[in-house]
Image (cartoon, rainbow, N blue to C red; front, side):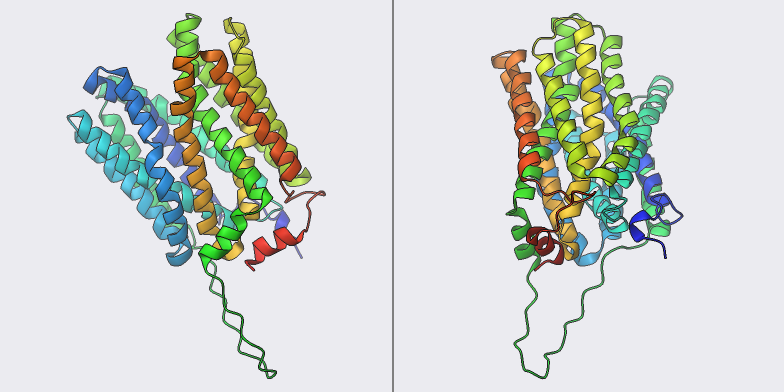
Length: 422
C-alpha cells in the first residue's frame, strides 16, 4: 500500500488548482504593471500611487478570518470562486473608471476578492496535502504563481502599447473568469465531513460537547509555535512590501543613481532566484523539517537587510538583492506550510484565515512603519530595523517553534491537542 505522505503532488486531481495558481499570477502580474501607471496617469501624484499600494492590505486584514470561518461552514470552493469573481468584476469596473476615487474604491473591493481567494485556496491546498508532501506542494504553488508573474506583465506591456493601458485590467478580469470555471468544473470540494456524534455508552458517561471553532482556534493561537509563526510571517510580509515593492527602487534610483532598467534588473533578479530556490527548498522542508528551511531563510533575509544599510554601490545592492531573493524563496512557502501543519484539522479554514490576517498586517505595516523610518531617519535605520525583526523571528522559531515534519518532528501533547481539536 502506498504511503499517503508520498503521493504525487501533481496529479489529475491536483493539477487544476496549480493551473489556477498560474492563472492567478498571470492576471495579477498584469495588474501590477498597470495599477501604478494608471493611478499616476489619473493623478500625476506619486504619493497617491503609494496610497493605492498601502490600502491594498487593509481589506485583507479583516477578510481573511471571515473567509476562513466561512470556508469551514460552507466549503472551500464557493469562497474561492466568489473571491476570484469579485476581483474580476472590479477589474471590469477599473477598465471603465475615469477618476481616481472610483479606481481606488474598485481596488479596495477587488482586494476583498483577493483575500478570499488567497485564504480559501490555501485551505484547499492544505486539505489536499499531508505533512510528507506539503513543502513540495507549496513550492510548486509558489513556482506556478511566479511563472504567471513573469508572463503576465509581458502581455500587459504589449496590450498597453498597442491598445490602451486600461485594457490591461481586462486581462486580469479574464484570468479570474478562467479560474472560476476551472475551480467549478475541475476542483473537488475538500471540506471535511462533520463528525457524527457518538451516542452515550451503557455506562451513562456524560457526553462530551464539541468545542466551538473559536475555542479551538484560540487555543491553537496560544501556543509557542503560533507565536513564532506570527513573528515570522509578519516580518516576512514587511520585508516583501517594504524592500522590493517600496524602498529599494527609491534607494537605488535616488541615492545611487540607478536607472529604471537597473531597478528592473534588481527586482527581476530577486524574483528569479526565489523561483529557482522554491522547489529544492520544498524538498528540503519535507525531508528534514520546516525549521531547517525557515530559520536559515529568515537569517538570509536579515543579512540582506543589514547589507543594505551599508550598500553604497550598485554591486553591493546587487549582492543584497541576490541574498534577498534566495531567502525569500526559502521562507515564503515554508511559512504557509508550517501554518498548515499546526492548523486544527476540523477548523483549518478559521485558523488559516487568522494567519492570513497576520500576513496582511505585515504587508500593511511594512510600507507605513519602515517607510516612515526611511523618510524621517534614513535608509540605514530603516533596513536595520527589518534586520533586527527578522533575526528575532529566526531565533524565536529556532527556540520555540515545534518541528512538524522530518526526523526531528516532535509528537508533543501540544501538537496532538492542536491537530485533534481537543
